[in-house]
Length: 502
Image: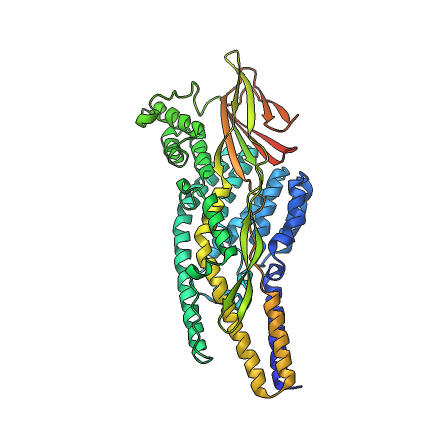
């Protein structure tokens, strides 16, 4: 056999081995892999979804997709009331993220991953989650602990959640800065190689790339979906849950800090306004002039109270899309990239009916956090470096492919040249896959309401816009604070969890 053919066969073997090590999302995008299990979850069959996601999670240990599956398994198990299993999955998720964070910027494992990424695509790198994931997994762990009647454990997770929220801003800034350095370094390498091949300019800036219609649409859509008031990477639900944790701990001062921050993010939200005024009034803190006429609640926020928390609908999910661009040495080429698909809200909200001081009353839940906006903000901020990296990576692979084919041609062997064309062609086709990994069982939004403990301990919750969807809940007499968690998976599939704290 021709020695060049042997070398190229070795290259093909390297590609196959690399693919197996990286996990199948390098060839088949993650969205397609998960679709049957996601459909099961949102159909309301959460027990089967929990079983399937747990099996997938266990089957992907030590692969690049492990974190993606553990997060989905954690959520599905919580929905299915498999709380210990949910905790195990979220503990694994947290351990994986801490492992990523402990790694040095440059070490043997990371260097190997970067080489894999250069040879294939971003899926070659382990999925490290969005910054939202780092915070929400602690929120879910806290929910698990509350549901298991372990408020002390829940408070530990709320503290970790607050700390994670503080850290993500710094980590995100570091990531963007590091990514730009890597782009600059790879551009320089490509320019050096280009000088030996005709000296074409290989630098592609985002200002040029964003003119491509598909990229421009993704960029504009994510900008329009973002909520600038939230601030980069800020999650209002985390702030509200943090305040609730402080109230359970009888710490109005710290709860007020969270309510003040929430008011800055949601200045027109009536629930947030009155919570802010009520907490400030309780400890004698100053109230903004334009809120001075707003009456505080007639009941305390930390005693004989019911909080209703609605996790409504489905968060945006990444899908694969391709755009065409002209590259040096290549001409027109298609590049796969991820962009968000958004889903409609399932319910306008919930009406909570109750009796207080012998009066029949009702309150409606209000949106506290828009996950479309939170996730779009992170995506929008990442998009310039992500798209630029994809283009530069594609050009790098094309230059490598050009060099392999040219070397085979120089050998004078038709077999070697044909093998080079075939292998590099298959390689480029197989690995032009967008990284669509993400946490798809998160809600589209979080809505919240609270009411004083009803006279008779009874609540009636009606799902607005969903005929016949109502639930009567009877609370124990000795309950001090009740948390009613409701997960709306579809208009007809609502999961209720009643957490009663004495």
